[in-house]
Length: 108
Ligand SMILES: [Zn+2]
Image (cartoon, rainbow, N blue to C red; front, side, top):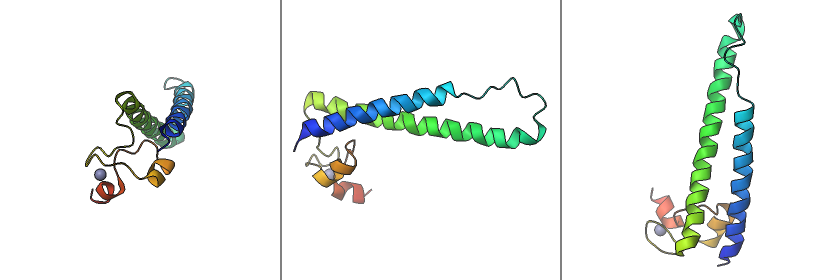
């Protein structure tokens, strides 16, 4: 297994997600300015909750990636956290932060 390849991929993904998180933060909705919002209110609430769930998704991905990267340090990268077998390369190819092999994932 070419671990370096996946490490690089994960690091790139991490940077990308960090950038997206920054963008989510900088486009923050101004709660105070919209006093006579009336009709727009529900739209805005939807917009805010969409923003929060996007932020949450990004944060979760970031945690997963950092978790995967930390496994390079102790040499456990690419091993299933459930059965300790090697994770299939075609899974890592699509999802380098995968924690589980095909069999375990299917049984979940
Ligand atoms: Zn497994």
